[in-house]
Image 1: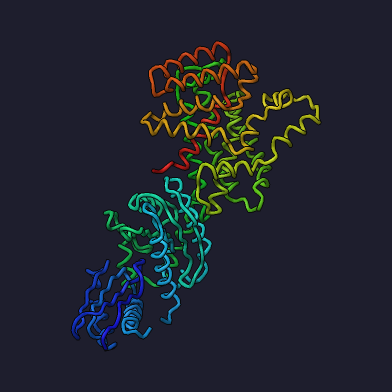
Image 2: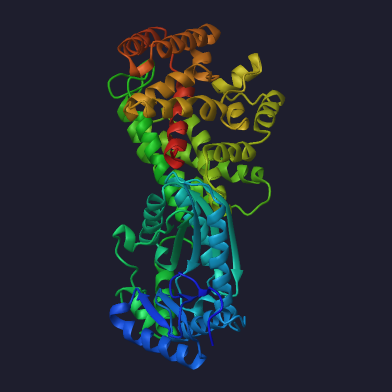
Length: 90
Length: 459
């Protein structure tokens, strides 16, 4: 499903994460990850994000993850909400 | 989203952004939260500590020269939070917040985030400051949080240990800050020179029975007292500030005893114990309410504490004849209706907020040293203060001499000019010969310095 609008979920507060989804050309998704704990958890954040994006069926979107040390459950919830919003469902 | 905690946090983020967008340049939004894992943050056990910490933080910013507006504290689904607007350079404000987080006995539990309309966030990293440390192990906190390194029980034990460390009741940080500021003000006033007619390090002025060391001995004896006044104000729970006066009186009598025993019975600071004691209590009361600090707020709360004191004190004076020797203030009220320091306090220290403090700050702004700015402040006070020290020694004629000479020295440029300095030097000789000691103005100079240091003017 194509992303239909700009959407965001979360915040840049400590222990939270801000996920933004922007519609882009074509069917492919792009993912960028920035984290204050990138060295330790960058890989894990990326794989969680890829997994959530894949299972959502999102297409044609640029997903940006700005992590401030969120727990994995928070990261998942923020990703899901941002994608729902970008798909026009929430 | 079905998670109320995450919803609440996102909601706060959006409120912060909306608030930052409406602020004029030079203002930031400060968001305060507890730096605790959700199970502890949401339990309600730390809501009171959070509120105390937020008030301390608001006070701290005020005392660093950053005015705060519309502080609000609430407990929401994400736990306790405080929000307010702060004026000042974003980076400087952030540094003051970090200073609080690192320096307050419980600051490590506080998380203060800043956002301004231009640059967005001002974080520790962008200022080159070290990251927050984990409450349990001291490693960079973000790593332990993201990796769930420590269980809730382990964090709880660390927090309980933190809260058991002496450092006063949660939220009493301002009490020691107020006490320290008062101690400084008293010492600064003591060593400022030249102070015409008064004791300073180079002259005894119109005093044969005391010198600078008498004042230093008295200052040392009074050093622990100011904090006690501040604490009385901080812990006062009543609705009417005037209800605090009886306990301040008791404390004042105690402080006077300390003074007299340190000086061998000489009155160095009796008037100052009254005015500065009231203002320490006033500052403490304001801090406990989370009201942003300013000289005017502090002085007018002081007035509320002593409301009606002139009428009450002097009415009883007329009604009794107990043979006690009258103070200078009491004699001049009876003969001339002069209300002296009581009236000054009851009107909210107008000589200080309207004359002494503006003069001190304007001289500092011109680049004068603190000493010279204090002397200018003293001259300015002499022109307006109803000084019962002067009246008792020199009557209305003495008052006229003091005021005219102070006006003249200021017209010559005060301590900012050679002629002004010369005039001040001559005043010292004149006042000493005429036995005139503007002690009331000297007390109010210490009050001026106190308010200046406690509530720095910011650009």
